[in-house]
Length: 112
Image 1 (tube, one colour):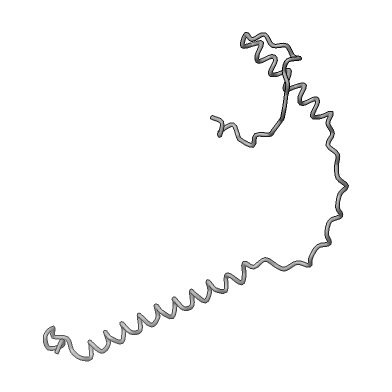
Image 2 (cartoon, rainbow, N blue to C red):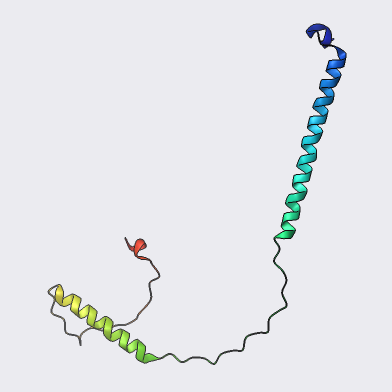
């Protein structure tokens, strides 16, 4: 019926149908092959299992050296005293008390 309307022979329509089926079949076969390759890549990326290492010996507890902290407190107190004097405030070094010291983990860019 279509061959009569468009003037295409049945043989040509048969070849066209075969070409279409063959093309779709090849596409699906390639998709299946690609999915198998991807599933095999998961196996390739697994880390190797190593023998469990012997536990490290426990170190003796280290006592904190307070002399370093005292030197740090003295330096910080001197810097604060110098800053206050530069601002015009009369501050004696005996009146400053450092109550705690904590490290700030911010970069200079985060402070800007």
